[in-house]
Length: 258
Image (tube, rainbow, N blue to C red; front, side, top):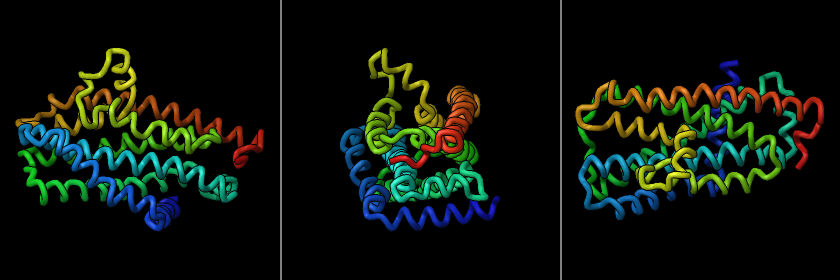
């Protein structure tokens, strides 16, 4: 299983970077997002610059990588007629999806790194003093949470024939609803409950709390707890989506219908 998972990650990364559109998303798009964020917050404090320019633009790059890949990969397999073959392969379909998500996550982290280097070298943005253990521990948990959310989205998109429409529909609203560039406190009251139900909202909040001056574990406890609760909820959602995919494939025989 582990060998198949690692091979899926390797193949996924190679196939993704071979597409010109994905190269744009990984390499060029982060530079535009980072520049836009800097123009908005250029006169702010160093800590606020890091929270909303570095982390904000980096998270937008990570989200674009995940949503485009996790959604379009399913649609692409369906278009090529290989979705059914993946489902009946000796390795479970869930393991293949996880491998694809991990591969996309690696490219997303590279994209975040590109945005950070661009901002640090060109705009001289300073990295605030932080506790490395708290920050990297939070980052690992954030990546796990985003992977779980991406797994749920991949399965949900597998059930739909309108993958491209859904993919394009959710990409940019997430930037605003989850507070990547702006605090969600400025959003209308009817939007805030939606924000609180989405893992990216608490993921970026966790990283911001972890990079505050004098950050402590008690300071990150609330976003960490909320993110953990949402991870468990989306694991349950993912399980039921997987069962629905199984029914569509084994009972209805319509998994690959385009």
